[in-house]
Amino acid sequence: MAQVFFEFRNQAVRAAVVLGSVLAGVLPQSTFAQEQTEKIKNPVAVFSGLDKITGRIINFDVYIGETVQFGALQVTPRVCYTRPQTESPLTTGFVQVDEITLNNEVRRIFSGWMYAASPGLHAVEHPVYDIWLTDCNLASKVPPPEDYDGPPIKGVVAEGEDPLAGPDDGVDSGPGIPRAKPFQG
Image (cartoon, rainbow, N blue to C red; front, side):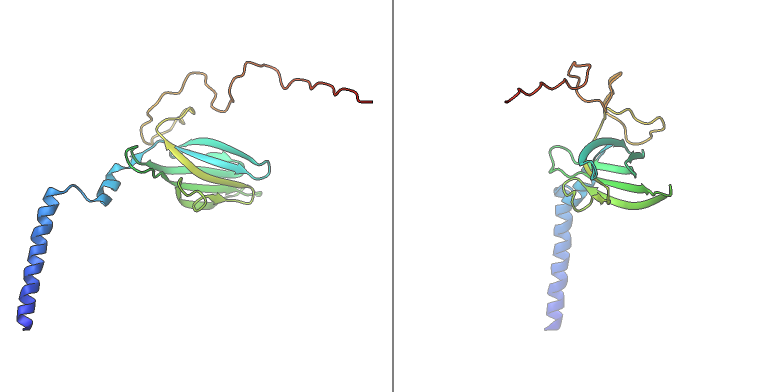
């Protein structure tokens, strides 16, 4: 009886191997392999930073390998991946964040993956500043650093454009003088 069982098991294993090899030749790559080949390497990581003292949120672009200072923090993205528009969105980046202490020492406070879809889980929460990844781009209005050697940039920076300037409303002076309140007697 045991010999019949083992012979049946061996035949089932051989049939599974044959069926697996047939399916492997007919069906496309597995979903996991497609995800690995479909990610897009981007040259620009887009971050948002919260200054908790002023309550201001600032969006800023950083090229891969470039270090940008936000308050007392230095942010350096190492990679930034997205998926094609035909896939479900998934934006990830490997980021290193250092803090400049009051003694002018550099201390690493974060080194890991950030996910734009869940910034609350993988953001840098500092007593004064918070930083999280919001997107990855193929180009930026900010010109690349002189020694940039990351993924290719797909876009051109406009001549004389200041990326930190707000929209030009055509007014050269500051806010106007407020009207005097009518006297109520």
